[in-house]
Length: 474
Image (tube, rainbow, N blue to C red; front, side, top):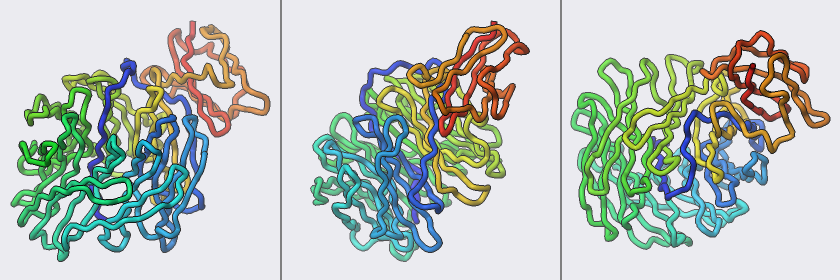
């Protein structure tokens, strides 16, 4: 299976409040796959009503079966569909058009067949179409739903013999019935693994974001701009460390029409730095900011324009073993300067959780998708959703059936629950995110006498939900 690191989204102007502090967890839901096998979630697709689609694949003993689950804005399962007729295809890169139709990429587990599928808004199968560029091994890397309900498709191709004698990328427009309207192709000679994904620009043209290989085998970032008639306006490479790889993870078009790219480059000592670059529509690199995680490597990286010209980076780092896998959120301003950065190691990432995707919700919060492991080697049948918002570890539980009083307090706090509810565990954090107290099966009255005066975060585990609230010790 050919895997591209790049995921791209068009960001429209939104009226959202800027994030002044790292967001906390509003709620957490574990969603079970339809069978008790390993489930690999791939991505989240946001729908106009606030609900979401979770796209992924069930891995059985000898088969792969695509599965899509629709979940409400509060994390409740609405429907779940598996597609046994598409067995041994991977499904990924889902999108939804203005009519609610679902499109997703399929890739054969044991072949280079490139295809995509159309489903209705209830997840029912409509059709599957194959796509090929001449006689090359062809891969669909991305789909984008355009405003006229057509589909912008990004494709990569290479010589069938794997020699790399020829490779390149195409981008094409298809109508809602799968008929090709036009296609633009660019070929390379003797450059293996060249690829590029197209994203629609605000002026009607297209950005291409991808990679090409150098003569020495190193990978460098590649970007280009085409006008609405698919004439190339400019192209350039981004090669931060000329003796090692530079590659892109994510790109968006911001409110002003600039191209924002998030990527990683390798250092001479084998470690990695990550970066964000701002590219004008005319191809000028306005700025580039480089960030370091020390000895950790980046395994996932996503960029969101949370509010106009302010950005949230979601990424995962990993060390020498999976137990060091940690997810982060980071806010940067319009010049790439770090406003805040927070590790969710204590709150979410315990060594058996992996970051998969994050989206901005319709109510101006974040929703994070995670993969869960039964142990260090085996992926579980459940995956996690975390809605995140407000200040660090401060959830909006006012609308929930949970209340904490008195708050502020000098001695005790009381937890009011619904009948038949109980707290299985609570955790108390300081504002640096460190756990300072933890207790299983506590009573509904918790002593805070020994705490120093100040502000703390309490996380309550109630049934399948997790609620957090800020408390103040007088």
